[in-house]
Amino acid sequence: MMGARQVGRARPLVVTVFGTRPQFIKLAVLWRPLEERFRSVLIDSGQHYDWELAGVMHADTGLRLPDLHLGVGSSSPAAQIGRVADALDARLARLRPQTVIVFGDTSTTAGAAIAAAYRGIPVAHIEAGMRSFDRSAPEEKNRLIADHLARWRFCPTRTAMANLRREGMRDGLHAVGDLMYEHWLGQRPSLSPPAELPPGGYYYVTTHRAENVDAPERLRSLVRILSGLDAPTVWPVHPRTRKRLTAAGLWQRLRKRPNLMLLPPVPHSRSLALTAGARMVLTDSGGVQREAYWSGVPCLILRDVTEWVELLDCGAARLVGLDARRARAAIDRRWIRRPVTDRIFRQRAPSRVIVRTLARDLARS
Image (tube, rainbow, N blue to C red; front, side, top):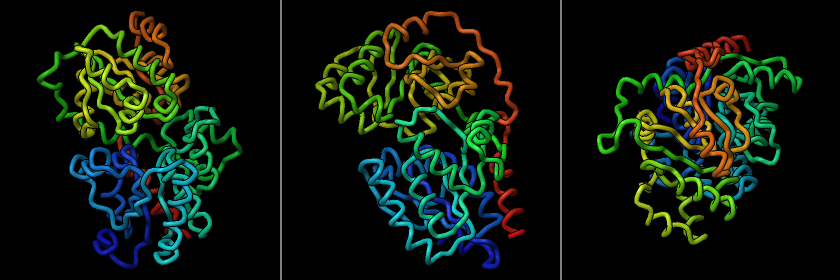
């Protein structure tokens, strides 16, 4: 176990569980500060398992290789949560860490939180308190599980803190900011618009949520939106999305559109550059919404709700769902953007705050 060997045996042992692309990005800025203070074991659940989504992320972000890989693969959310919890249980019994760190709102998040809680191991949930208030969404269920099982709830915004208090949580709330902002700040000096595309002259699209790509009618609505865009459009297509497009008979139709550039998933550094150079971003990703805001690029959110309400309030993003008329009206309407006033959202080094908080509390226990 690389992290466990690199630091003294007397230090507390912390296990960090991750497994999806956004979690790679958040861990990329956390793992070094973490391993300065703790013995550290990194466990990849394998929720994102192919090279395009996961393998490339180590080289792209500088994240070291994991100590353990659970290999849970693809399945329904409930099955994935069960596989993560089951695969992790025996390993946690053997490792006996002082805490387990989880991120965000995925099956990996919920499965790891459940496994740790049943072993009596305190859970630290990073990006706690985010809510869409759509209980039908798998991500919302995962957030609720992790938040209510956690001892430490590390919140990225003032709204997130308020959400937790409304649900009766008063202890273990920490306003730390957003690890993705810290990562973006580190990448900003090297960002340059793609040479093959006109700066500010193209749309950048990302979409991966099951609610948008698994239902054929919603997928056709997405295609209608993209077909109506009036400039070159760059779309790195998630493997599951491509599979659904092919099954619905839409993939070949899209390939014939001259303005549409269909790509395989791109490294995160490339996605940041594409975002920074775009006229506008269209996405259902919470991470890409924030990256567009930090890059000063308007964003259409291809959902009916967003957890990042600060972006709506300041005029940096607009909700359009998968309605082509709403999307066109939002593009054409004048954009008036103001800075986000929430100082929590703007904190520049949340990784250090998280590590200091854990070190202080574990020293007392």
